[in-house]
Length: 270
Image (tube, rainbow, N blue to C red; front, side, top):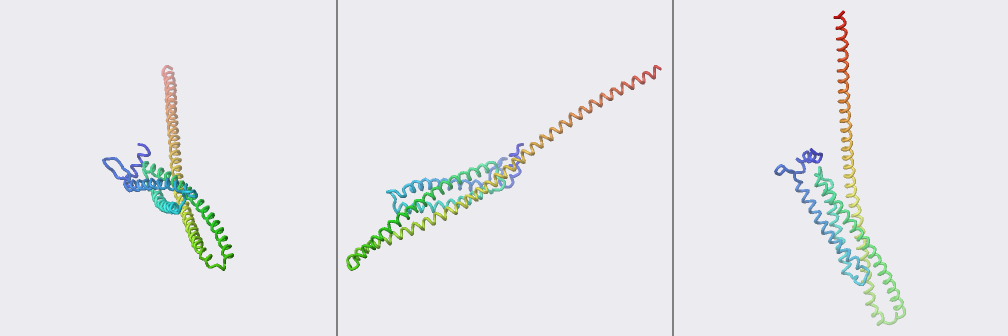
C-alpha cells in the first residue's frame, strides 16, 4: 500500500465520503473551488476589457464616459478580487486535503496571483494616466484663468464685457469639478491597490507556509526511507554474521569430535 493510499484511508472519515467502495472529494470543497475558478474567469474578462480601455486614456478617443467606465470596472474588479482572495485563503487552509484537492489549491493560488498581478499593473497604469491628465488639466486651467483675469482688468468699466466672461467662468468651475472628481478617483484606486497588496501578501504567506510543510513532510519521508534502508542493512549484516558464526561453531564441533574420537581410539587400542 502506498503512502498516498494510506493517507486517503486515514483522512477518509473527515473530508470525504465513500461511494461504492471509492472515496470522493468533499462536495463543499468542490463547490467552493469551482465557484472561485468561475469568478477568476470573469475577472480575466474584466482585465481584457480594462486593458483596452486604459490604452485609450490620453488619446483622441479619451472622454468622460471612457474614464467613468474604467473607474467602474476597476472598482468592481477590486471588490471581486477581495472576495476571491478570501475564498482562496479558505481553500489553502483546508484540513487534510487529498492529492486532488492539493492540485486544486496550487492551481487556484497560481491563477489568482497571476490575475491579481496583471490587474495591479493595470491599476498603476490607470493611476499614472489619470495623474498626467489632472496635471495637464490644472496647467490649462491656470493658463485660462490667468488670461481671463488680464482681460477683465483691462475692461473692468464695461458691463457688457463682464457678461461675456460669465460663460468662461462657468467652464472654469466645471473643469475644477472634473479635476476634483479625477483626484478622488485616483485616491480610490490607490486605496484598492493597497488593499490588494495586503491580500496578495496574505495568500503568498499561506502558500509559502504550506510549501514549508510539504518540504518538511518530504524531508521526514526521506529520513524514514534512509532509516529503513539502514535498518535493513543492519539486519542483513546481523544475519550474515549469525550465519558465519553458526558455520564456525559447526566446524569447531566437528574438529572437537574428531579429536575426541582419536583420543578414545588411542585409549581403546592401548
